[in-house]
Length: 340
Image (cartoon, rainbow, N blue to C red; front, side, top):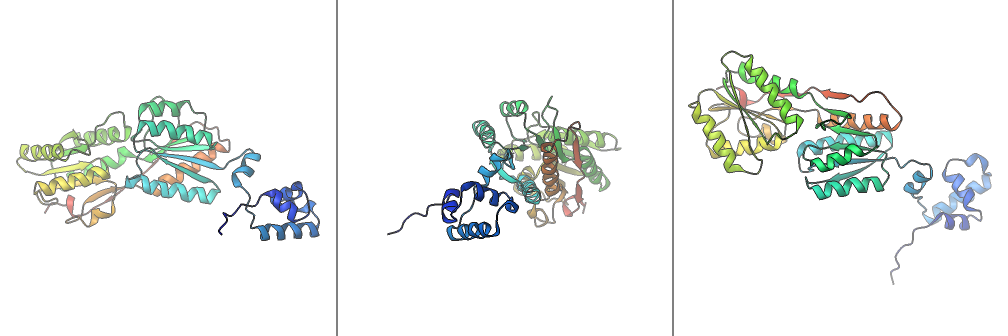
């Protein structure tokens, strides 16, 4: 007959070692200098015999520290978020913190639930990747007194540390690259701008850079990620409006770049020949698609690592004014932006 294993307690250890719980607690907390050699040996043997493993949560709460960091991600399916998560998790390991990751899936009910859940777990700080978060959840974040760092998206009228990409520099670099390769009619393709600062900053830099380039015309469209027919129609209209002459696209993020690439295939337009293409985020498939797609690579792992280190500094009492730490991107040039 199988019996479910019962986890040993500190009382079990004390009983097996023929001592009190206070002595065992001192042993576990590193105060072994106050224990005799014989008592230490008995406690060690009891712990080994019982396979005793202390509750780290209980010990942390007793010391007034949980060493837990909360992470709220709007969409874990986004490759950008996965790379950022990897950097955050690496920084947690390096600094002795444990990460509690919550994926809201862009759903308002989940956003509210996870904010309350992290509070109940007494996390010491929060990192937020809020690109898809609703305003109600962002408002609740504003009211939190926890040390917090935002990744990528800023919250209007909320003074907080932000870590992300230098969007102006990156978009200007990509726009200049298209112009240098002879593309004269440029279209910036993004998801609906809303209040998302990353989309607005990239569009503004695209427009400002193009305006300073002789003979370059700049347009922009906003398309839902999940509406392929609408994407097809917008791209067809752009291409036909300029009679196929020197047309190129800049796409605002990796997920949309994939949908635009699919649309170009449906329209039988070959990137690098009939139309130019540059996308944000260097996804693994980009180098394998046709002649390869030129991308603006973000240092996502470094962004995640830096965000976690910043929230730890705040936890440790850093009271300097909130800052924005912006990383430079790297243009990975492939066939899609080189005119044949």
